[in-house]
Length: 328
Ligand code: ACO
Image (cartoon, rainbow, N blue to C red; front, side, top):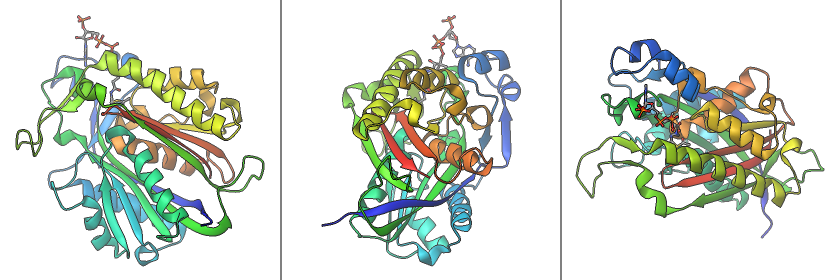
């Protein structure tokens, strides 16, 4: 069966109104603006209001992505929503978005923590390439403020709430684009996980284990070490599959967890920092929302233009990690 070409039509994002600065955080836990900025690059994060759920952030980001694509809800027949902080244990938060936007077809969630958007993109790409849907909304949306331990300075300073979305379309063109053709579309995605590292980044609660939601726990230094090594290798492997190198990429759109991880990873891939979209200062680590938030900022700020070659990459709990290569 001939695969369809999957093309990105537009992006959108949303950050909750309430901002929590490093300065304000230093009144809650024993930390300083200097420490947070020097170690992570983060200046502030956005916090969802009471009664504002992951689905609400997702709907706003999706509406903006639809508008940027010149489409409305009924033009969409697939939603894949990446989140670790769903409104309810079930049903999927994606179905709330489906009802609000009146999209057709089917909608479901994927859960792969900070690499969730890469997993969602990969799943949507496969459905569209096989013709099982025509147009997809791929969303990353999170309310991490609800699973943070606000007494633990090692973790609560790092995360924030937000959402980002991309609209994809499957076209009749034959297969994925090639590097030489200059045509838009997804070249490919590469996903990895290693459950041996389950315990270095996890939530200490869950439906089956404790019947509580739990709080995020992390061995920060270990995660840092894995992040640089795994993000650079998955990026290099994906580029190599398509006969490309870091220097061929117009923009790296990395998971926004820590500017030092982003810097070290870009260096290893062989791309300079002026080719990296960096937004972590503005919203901290928003987990699955982080890559589409950065992508949308890159597009709306005029940095990312039609025809640019993009390498998206992320790593998170699992450990799980992944990359996607596409021409915008
Ligand atoms: N404010 C002030 N001091 C702090 C804080 C804080 N918020 N947090 C920790 N410290 C202290 C520690 O107690 C320690 O003090 P000590 O030397 O007296 O023992 C000191 O700072 C150094 O602590 P480290 O944990 O060694 O600091 P490090 O340089 O490793 O930075 C950090 C910590 C920022 C968490 C880093 O390890 C990191 O970014 N890791 C990656 C984590 C991450 O991004 N996770 C997100 C999910 S996975 C992903 O997205 C890639």
